[in-house]
Length: 630
Image (cartoon, rainbow, N blue to C red; front, side):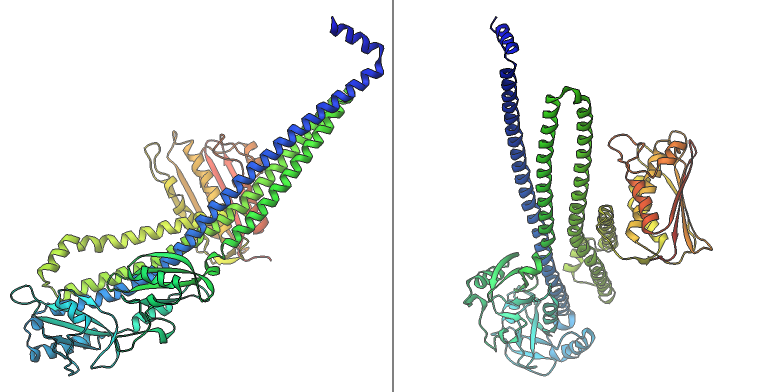
């Protein structure tokens, strides 16, 4: 009843009715704006918090990776010194267990040891000492070494590499490698066999250990005294006193030195000489020494500048996106108000609103793809650094391991009758299996790192931010590398037989091109061929044929054909269109062949054509000029 009276009264007083409606829509619009503003603010805060958290996590992971790279370089120097010392200790221990040395008859031992000094070409001299410390060496010296560290530890039964000393006969700075001479009876050694080697190898390794400008390395003995350092005035020996780093005025250097003496491994950020630097340190296994690498802070953290720049760009894009969103909200409200005010324009406004929404979706998608491309390129670049480091060091590791195996084989040929201890150890380690399996292991690791680098290169090419210069490459080699990456798709599985690859490569000269991008073209075409074959395997066995040749027009032709399901005429006409795909949702988005067309035609001024018959297969023909037309 009251509602009817209100309607009658509003008809009688139209001005008051208009005023009420105007106030009603104003209040409704204001409340709606406040709600939308609140949603935008909450959304922006959530996105910002997520972005900041993600930035900190990624930055921490990248910094840990860069620090690990410096620590790995330190360990590389440590391994170099350890391997060198281990070989020298093995040489002295082998001589100490020989029949000639165990005779303890110096007139018999002397010519044998002098010949070994000449043969090994590493030792300055070799000496024999009896339990009271009396020593005689191949240079004719006869000092007493009862007070020497190497003598005391070897008489206790250890084969040691002692701290550097100045030899009492040679007067040269050297490292004493010593081993006990087994007695015929009892457990106490019959004497000690010692060999003096120059410290030059240790100094050389430490001098070559650096990472960027301003970095340097040093080595400490068990008392914290430098035995190798760029500043030679800090190096000490028992004959030349030097200040131990354990007594330094810098408390952080003292703390680092204590950890090095305690044989810890770590990398820490400390302030040395008024500058912040990372100190990576690790102990040696073959001696009571530790190696440290000092790297200025900026050398390690400089790659993070790209991440900071990326975060700034993404923050700017986020701000622009939020402003655009709010502007879109305001525009939407204006359109809605007009629709409410004028019913005659409702249909037109609805159409305009849909067009604006579609435009907005396209802009957001474009911004997402641009941001994703920059992020992918940045992450791929940071992954590429440790991958390259591992790949480069695998070559050295392969050479080192082969050198060790060759040396081991030489020892077996030279000393066919080893001691029982060595024979037992050989059987326990199964040396023949290790010698056969280690090169295979290193080769498989190299293949793995190559695949990682190829994946990184593909990511960078997809992002289109890696504008590398053209270079001359082998097209056939690029095809083989791409087939290697796709090997897991070609081999037989329980669900499908093997896809056969038939190659007919021509004798091609080097082609000037963007190698990585051209490999991406091969990848996209081959992946499509494999997908087409997998859909038709119920009818025939899969086969991909690859043929290359050089035409008289100085153009390289690459033909890739398959016996898959083929294409219809309609699909052939649209195969290079952007976002066109015949694959089900989740298997493709229609970018592969569009990118391939852009790389071949736009980037290389070449041609790419497709010929296909439904049910019989497809053939792509790619033409690349031999030289660039820049």
